[in-house]
Image (cartoon, rainbow, N blue to C red):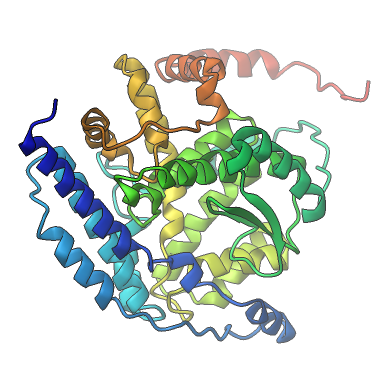
Length: 428
């Protein structure tokens, strides 16, 4: 039976978590910095020769900061749980100050605190996001000379993809399944909340894209939202904020990999976004970044959308972009490492904690303590590859084995005896 002191401690934690939840409510960064469809229309009406004209709504951070002040008065960052609460408060503040500085260099400064930047070393590792992107590009270029005769994928509209997604979410979430809606304007091809998955009307998808959306948007973003909304004692777990983005996107990209829906073109896009952000930091304006993407893809619409991701909320003339997109590759690296380490340590019991709401990987120890205290609920919903982890275990075993092997000498031998092997026409 819990003592009076234990009950008081639990009530303090509940109080702080609810205050943080209230503080985070108005921080809707992607919504606040979204561009209207008219910006794109005007850009192409001017033959993509003039900088877009974008305005943003004002944001008053004071109500959020006052709630954070009240919450911090109850936080004593000596324990893991309090350190977790402190991290939440800091991240919510960065988000509030970002929105208070949209369209200015100040937005970029807080964006760097929240998400990092291409040349900033990763946490616990000296490698940078830019170096990760360069490695991805190098590996892809080494593969590009291989003629695998991959057929061009069929292209599907939203009307074709939406029923497939709807069927998958109904089967997985039952009565909690989000609605799948097609909308005219959206800051990406697809965005998800606990209540709906929205698809941009003019977006086009391959067969892999549809599977990717189900695994990325539904089985990660929707799933963690639904689980977080059920955390009545810790409602902050239902709020996605800048401090949860890296792990959320890392899990989502990992889900693409483990489900077999990741493609080289997708990896290339993730790397190109990092290069584009660095270009903007070094002074490239929207037009220069647009032309970079246009050269890479040959598709004006995609080039515009990719450039918009870099400049939304920032300075169109360059020098101060939105750095969120550096988190995807690092998030993938972080999540992959954490999942492998969890199994290596024999602590598979901790794996489900990654899905109990919106969180960062480093929050797991604190959340474990909160589960034992009875404040954090284990997740109701889990991705298919966690429910049935056979493919995950095989993937981890293989990747761990390969990472420990030096195959340079064997590779050279194979290259040597293939040098004289006739080239085979696949049509024969």
